[in-house]
Amino acid sequence: MKCVDANGRTKAATPWGVATLVDELTLPQRAGEKRFASVVQLLEAPRGEKLVRFAYSSGGTTRRGPVTLRLRDLERLRAALAEHPELAEVLRLGGG
Image (cartoon, rainbow, N blue to C red; front, side, top):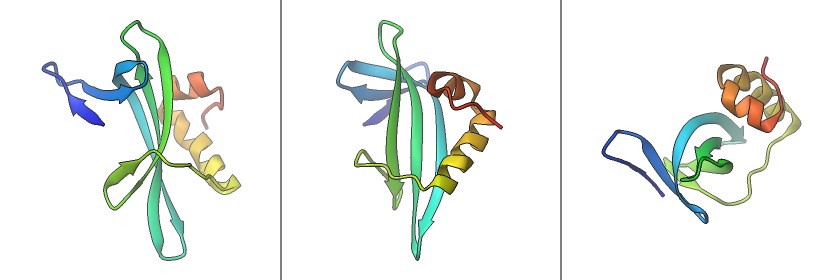
Protein backbone atom coordinates (compact mmCIF):
# COMPACT_ATOMS: atom_id res chain seq x y z
CA MET A 1 0.00 0.00 0.00
CA LYS A 2 1.31 3.46 -0.93
CA CYS A 3 -0.17 6.80 0.07
CA VAL A 4 1.01 10.41 0.23
CA ASP A 5 1.23 12.32 3.50
CA ALA A 6 0.40 16.00 4.09
CA ASN A 7 3.99 16.98 3.15
CA GLY A 8 3.73 15.24 -0.23
CA ARG A 9 5.98 12.32 0.77
CA THR A 10 4.98 8.87 -0.39
CA LYS A 11 4.40 6.40 2.44
CA ALA A 12 4.35 2.61 2.29
CA ALA A 13 3.02 0.11 4.81
CA THR A 14 5.62 -2.39 6.05
CA PRO A 15 5.69 -4.97 8.86
CA TRP A 16 7.77 -2.40 10.83
CA GLY A 17 5.23 0.38 10.43
CA VAL A 18 4.58 3.03 7.83
CA ALA A 19 7.80 3.98 6.02
CA THR A 20 8.72 6.90 3.78
CA LEU A 21 9.64 6.20 0.16
CA VAL A 22 13.16 7.59 -0.37
CA ASP A 23 13.86 6.27 -3.88
CA GLU A 24 12.31 3.91 -6.41
CA LEU A 25 13.75 2.21 -9.47
CA THR A 26 11.44 0.58 -12.03
CA LEU A 27 12.95 -1.96 -14.42
CA PRO A 28 10.65 -2.75 -17.39
CA GLN A 29 10.72 -6.44 -18.39
CA ARG A 30 9.16 -8.69 -20.97
CA ALA A 31 8.56 -12.42 -21.34
CA GLY A 32 7.14 -13.15 -24.77
CA GLU A 33 4.06 -10.96 -25.06
CA LYS A 34 3.84 -10.34 -21.29
CA ARG A 35 5.01 -6.92 -20.15
CA PHE A 36 5.68 -6.16 -16.51
CA ALA A 37 8.27 -4.37 -14.38
CA SER A 38 10.36 -5.16 -11.34
CA VAL A 39 10.37 -2.41 -8.72
CA VAL A 40 13.10 -1.75 -6.14
CA GLN A 41 12.22 0.74 -3.40
CA LEU A 42 14.41 2.33 -0.74
CA LEU A 43 12.25 3.07 2.29
CA GLU A 44 12.98 4.69 5.62
CA ALA A 45 11.26 3.33 8.72
CA PRO A 46 9.96 5.72 11.41
CA ARG A 47 13.18 5.35 13.45
CA GLY A 48 15.43 6.00 10.43
CA GLU A 49 16.21 2.37 9.56
CA LYS A 50 16.69 1.77 5.81
CA LEU A 51 14.49 -0.89 4.20
CA VAL A 52 14.63 -2.28 0.65
CA ARG A 53 11.47 -3.67 -0.95
CA PHE A 54 11.40 -5.71 -4.15
CA ALA A 55 8.09 -6.01 -5.99
CA TYR A 56 6.76 -6.36 -9.50
CA SER A 57 4.15 -4.43 -11.40
CA SER A 58 1.73 -5.67 -14.04
CA GLY A 59 -1.22 -3.86 -15.53
CA GLY A 60 -0.45 -0.79 -13.42
CA THR A 61 -0.78 -2.72 -10.15
CA THR A 62 2.20 -3.31 -7.88
CA ARG A 63 2.36 -6.79 -6.35
CA ARG A 64 4.65 -8.25 -3.76
CA GLY A 65 5.04 -11.78 -5.10
CA PRO A 66 8.31 -13.37 -6.02
CA VAL A 67 10.51 -11.18 -8.21
CA THR A 68 12.59 -12.98 -10.82
CA LEU A 69 15.43 -11.31 -12.68
CA ARG A 70 17.29 -12.86 -15.59
CA LEU A 71 21.04 -12.23 -15.65
CA ARG A 72 20.56 -9.62 -18.38
CA ASP A 73 17.90 -7.91 -16.22
CA LEU A 74 20.34 -7.87 -13.31
CA GLU A 75 22.90 -6.18 -15.58
CA ARG A 76 20.27 -3.59 -16.53
CA LEU A 77 19.47 -3.10 -12.83
CA ARG A 78 23.15 -2.47 -12.07
CA ALA A 79 23.33 0.08 -14.90
CA ALA A 80 20.10 1.81 -13.76
CA LEU A 81 21.51 2.13 -10.24
CA ALA A 82 23.91 4.76 -11.60
CA GLU A 83 20.94 7.15 -11.42
CA HIS A 84 19.93 5.90 -7.95
CA PRO A 85 23.06 6.25 -5.77
CA GLU A 86 21.27 5.71 -2.45
CA LEU A 87 19.81 2.40 -3.64
CA ALA A 88 23.19 1.41 -5.15
CA GLU A 89 24.91 2.07 -1.83
CA VAL A 90 22.39 0.06 0.18
CA LEU A 91 22.36 -2.85 -2.28
CA ARG A 92 26.14 -2.64 -2.80
CA LEU A 93 25.66 -3.52 -6.46
CA GLY A 94 27.33 -0.36 -7.73
CA GLY A 95 26.05 1.69 -10.63
CA GLY A 96 27.31 2.09 -14.16
